[in-house]
Amino acid sequence: MHEAPTILPNWLAQRAASAPERLALQCEGQEWSFRALDAWATATAQQLAAAGAQPGERMALLLNNRPEYVALIHAAPRLGISFVPLNTRLAAPELAWQLHDSGSKLLIYDETTAALATVTLAAMAEAPRALMLGDLAAQPRNATKLQDTINLDDIFTIIYTSGTTGRPKGAMLTYGNYWWSAVGSALNLGTHTTDRWLAVLPLFHVGGLSIAIRAAIYGIPMLLHRTFDAAAVNRALDTDGVTIASVVSTMVQRMLAARGPQPYPPALRCLLLGGGPASRPLLEACARLGVPVAQTYGMTETASQVATLAPADALRKLGSAGMPLLPTTLRIEQDGAEAGPGEIGEIVVRGPTVMRGYINRPEATAEVLRDGWLHTGDLGYRDAEGFLFVVSRRTDLIISGGENIYPAEIEAVLLAHPAVAEAAALGIADAQWGQVPAAAVVLHAGATATSAELVAYCRTQLASYKAPRHIRLLSELPRNAAGKVVRAELQALFVA
Image (tube, rainbow, N blue to C red):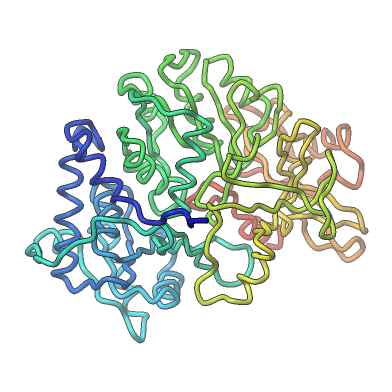
């Protein structure tokens, strides 16, 4: 038997050759064809070489969404370097640690992150070379020979997971991880020559980064927004021919609130919804406005999506993340054995989208990668038809008096209350029970409800031990750049 080839032509160069004038990138009124984007990526790779970047090195990017970020993404394989997308919302000590841990030799930043970069570098004993984006563009083009192929086994990115305890871990993702993620998504959603993918998620997050890569592989335009603005997204959906967009639940809520009763255009064929299951009221509101929501389950360690729920099943399978994408095998494990339908256990996955491991963390890698399976730490179940339902992070599980309580159960009840817009449940320490459930809630604009009223409501819907003992009303939930609730901050709030 012959092993499958691992060498592909450079996917952006391939698109530039086959469809040179087709739109590749659009941002704030500027447009680049595949020919122009390919030339930009080539020039950027040569300028990186002139700045001293060497094949095999790692480059860190401290940038918010902008077209140059896309050029840098595609320049990396030309020069044979991997890159580390840094979360611009982190503090300088956190960034300094990631730069050191990843072994990055070069840091690229811009005028919006210059102050943060300066403080970060000053905190490091051995800082990498640093270059402002404008200074990079002014570099001469080095005549070094660039690579025109992609080895799917090579590391493309190192992305640090947010983590719930201790230091974040850098997930090493290969070109093959991204390639098979793109293939799996295409087989699930289909690809149309008229597709346009809207990117409002940060490019330093795997969900946003994947759009840039998929757009080049599919040969479709990426419509890049620098930040999320609900009104701007609504305008793009109405006027820019967007067919696919990737968002999280809070973004959708803000889009609907800004839009009012006006339906969305039929050109929008898929709104990929990540960051956790959506509430029934949100899904029903989307259905009324003709928004084809496709809920997803994924993670950094799998280069984005693991499973996706088809829009047609959004209400029939409320709360489900759908079926695993074709390259991925998924099962639910209880004590090492496969669980039956409806039985809650750990979600484990296997397939070509699973990361190589965590950089410099052999013990952590061995803990999650066992016998070819990635142990996600997430709890869920599959129903009789095989649809996945994500219940909770294992680390978010509340154990009160020996009883397991899943935050998603409490959140679903709170979100069904007409006054509640957002909810996040968590366990807080209790001398008698070990933990008791609590929740933070954001009310709809103009709505009124007291903490006591919401606690009483939960007691009518949940077993007494599951009902939150304490509820805090907040103006907004603390979230990370991926849109996920930062439960550690909520913990600190309740402790305070």
